[in-house]
Length: 337
Image (cartoon, rainbow, N blue to C red):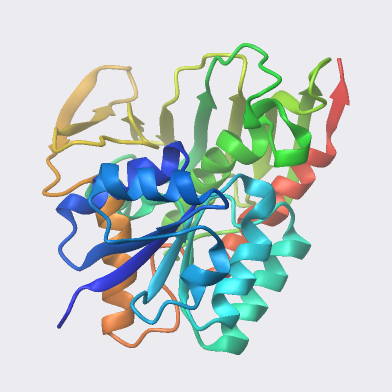
């Protein structure tokens, strides 16, 4: 079967990461790129060996030589571009978050379903073999009954008026940019603990601090209660460097994931550490990938299409909507301080 032909929407940093990652893809290839700037599109295409470059997104969506698109613009444009691509008959992989709110995300999901195209939110860690191994360990009782998930993702980016991270009009802020990963991990682990792909919290208690400049959430914390004695403690920030790890505590020990989100962008091995209840290292497992993190994501998408599935099992639309519901509640808790 021929490889899935991808069109990249935008030419920013994450678009370049995806383009480089596709070099190790088994099921896909980048066929085109588009930008609102024709010059940027041409330069990006030349830098990444892409055959076609377009100076507007509509032209890319109309290209018969493109099967699927990867939406890599700032967050605030995700929903409108995903809807436009779906209505043009293109399958859609959208960089997280899918939209700015649950209401927007619902419109995107509806458009994809009405158009009969595949839609996936780009939580690339979900398709990496490390995540599958963590799930297998939990299902195998490595830590007994899961009681607590602790996840943090914080980066340190000093205020920059020109950065999308600090621009409210571009969907900046910590919760949508990195906090979304912690929510996704918590819901994923809770789902695994209950024999499902994900689970929804019965309550969300959250807080976040609005920055003095930029009017975006600079950092925040949340407590998710999944019922049955399972909770998650989450933290995120764009001006606070955190340990950026995930810990899963059970009544028989702990799983520590040192690199849960970006895992590795090359082919180096990642580690999973298991500790007993005395805090002693019980064993260490390594996971060695055979392709790039983003290639795994694109290949999972292509495989779902080949199998005739209506959604990608790793990140389904319902999973995305559940994540957005929590993010809405977390963002609503942001106050000046």
